[in-house]
Structure formats: C-alpha cells, structure tokens
Length: 428
Image (cartoon, rainbow, N blue to C red; front, side, top):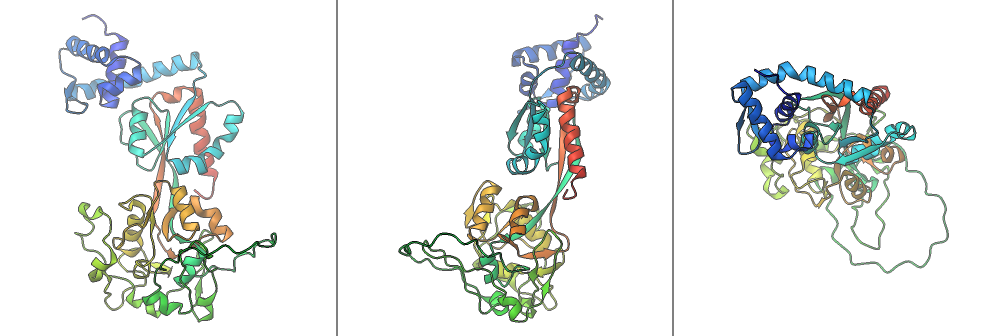
C-alpha cells in the first residue's frame, strides 16, 4: 500500500474533531466536496468506513476513533513545529460572554495589546462559541460550560457568584436597609422650575411579611415626575437587628418573626425534573406553594440556609427584571437559595446583563446578577443585596483552547496571561 498523504490524515482529523464535513471544510479552507472526496479516498485506502453519515454531521466509527488516537499527537506536534518556525501576525480569535469579556477580560489583556497583540473577539452563547472553537474559527473561548468536545482542552479559570439585588429605594420598601447611610449628593446648581408631573402609575404593593417588618416604608411609585424615596434605616429604628455579610455583600435587615409565614416547603422531585424549567407561574396561581409549615426557615427552606434578607413571598409582589423570558439565572438562584421555582414572570426582559443592571439601579425592580458586574455599585451604595445565603449559586468558568492552537506564540501567550491573572486575583 502506498504511503498515506498527510493531507488526507489532516482532513480526517478535522472531520473527527468537528463532527461535521461542513465545519471541517471551514477549518481547513477547503470546499465541502473536496473534504468529502478526501475522506472517501482515505476510507478506500484503509478499506474500512470511518464515519457514519447522520442527518446533521457525521459520527466516527470505532476504527476512526482508533485512527484519531494514533495520529492526533503526531499531527499536532508537526503543526506546532511549522507554526513556531513560520511565525504569523494573525490576530488571536477570542470568544466569550459579552458582559464578562467586556467587564473583566478586556482590562486584563490591555498590557498585551499595548505590547502589540492583535485581538479579535466574538461574543455569544457558550454552545455556539465552543462549536466555533472546535471548528477552528476561534483560538480561545471563555465558557461557563465545561467543554466536552474532541480536540479541545479546558482549564477551570474563575468562579462567579450570583447576588439578589435591588436599588436602595426598592430594598427599603422590602425592609432591607444599607449598612450605612448613602453618601450625600454633591451640591449642584440651583434647581430650575419643577416639571409638571406625569401621569401617576400604580405602585407595587408592600404587603404581608414585608409590611409587618417595615410598616413605615413608602412604596416606590413608577411615575415620570417623582423621585423614588431614598433608603432609610426605618427597619433598624423599628428594632430589626442587622446582620453583617461578607465584604462582597451589603448588610441586610435580619428576617423577623413575621417571616415565619414567608417561606415555603421544598419543591418535590417532580418540580425539579427537566420539565420544571419553564418560567414560573404568576403568584395568583401558586398559593399552594406559599403556605408554610411550622418551623420553616426564613426564605423558604429546602435550599441553602439564608442568613438574612427577604424571602420569596415578599418578592413575589415586586417587579422582576430578567435576562430572558425563561428566567435562567433567577430560576437557578431561587432553587438554590429558596428551594423552589420563582413564582412570578418577568416584568422587564433585557437580553444583556448590563442592561439588567441599569434597569435595577433605576428602581425598575429586583434581579439576580453576577457579583463581578455589580460589585462597584454595591460598594457605592447604588445597589443593595436582598439576601445573604450561606451558599450562593456559583458558576465555574473555563478557558478552552483548541488542540494545536497553542503552537501559535500569540495564542499561548494570551492563555498563559489569563491563567496567571485570574489565579492572582483574590476576587476569583
């Protein structure tokens, strides 16, 4: 048998790693018919099928898996030699979630850019970015999904914590007060004529345990001509003790005895099944879940222990700002902390966490956000945490690199720089 062409083996390995003739063609810069022809030529030379054709993509046969295992290391090593001997000024292709990439990663890479690094970024969802990584369209990807793709190596990089937050005015109406009074605003020019007030809208009600905890709170009114009330220490004045959270959390008013009726029994196994991931039902349809048995911990039991803050029943009457209609972040927080699904639908949906942050700061309602995104606003008093769970929900982020891409000095440099920067940062 004549020696096999390296081109045939490279094409085979690209198809094996991407699971797709089309993706392999894009990776190799070839046409789809050319890749198909090379795979058939290799199958003919080896006298065995290597892939089963599926409706979408291809599946490797056991013979293909064995061949890939034997040739991958050698082909990758050969590519590394070529890359190192023929340096290129091609830009590093980096993918990741928009908010994290812009808020955290870009500042970390500034020193490399000043030294000449050429960088191109792709923003999107983890599944799409990992597919692009496996297909050779990206060099590195930050992902909160652990990659399980052939030809992709991933390292744990950071942990992101999620916080239940609101503006101080909304928190005050729920009986949660900041650890210290908000800073006084700097004096400005004399105010001009007061604008005519716009049409008054109905406030969301402050009822139940929240009203019992802070009877003097004034609910925010969502009108054009009126400022929301500032946070006060009414809760402390009424005798509600204060509990101090960690340095990343704002002090919150402890749950009073009135919260004994605020939690709910843990959800059943059926509630936590796959089919339970649809958006929560409105409060009017969830009374059965709001009844507490005796001894239910504040906040709803069934989830992580709640050190201080409000529970799900009080929150059911507050507008919810969410990233998506199905409440992916809120739903996970509710299950982890309160042991149940959220019993309300989103009133405002913004498919960008930075927009969610802006809406919450403006007093539109409550939301769940990653700590990295709201840390500055919490320190400045523009946001208040509403709960202080012992074990808040945490996502682990990974830095994924395509096999062979590290042969490029620029890619290896970016990867090493990010690994070192995150490991040296005490916040991650």
